[in-house]
Length: 109
Image (cartoon, rainbow, N blue to C red; front, side, top):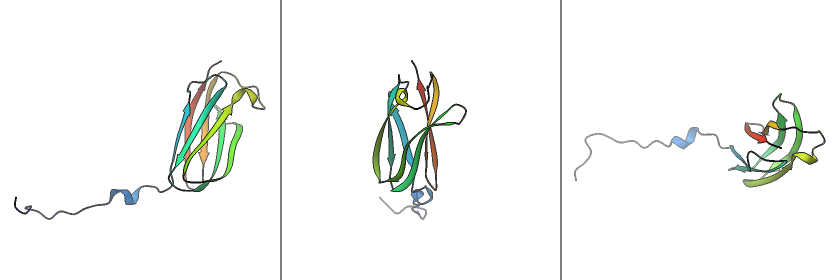
């Protein structure tokens, strides 16, 4: 096998990707009163994790503070929330200084 007829260059495509990102899932979805919210991150950061309704109104703050790299599991019981919540669409919002991620959740009663 001979030399290539052109000069090759390697490019690191990861250099332009954000270093602090969140993956959010919840199980079960749809859910009946309670769900487990799983947040995964590659880097440590300070976050605010909240549940908001379809109008964007904050229903409940689930977590505020430092989050280490890895996985955080939060169990949300909508029935024990201070507001009487009805069947519908809710969103879990994860905010840090650099990034905001939103995940849709559906509550069925």
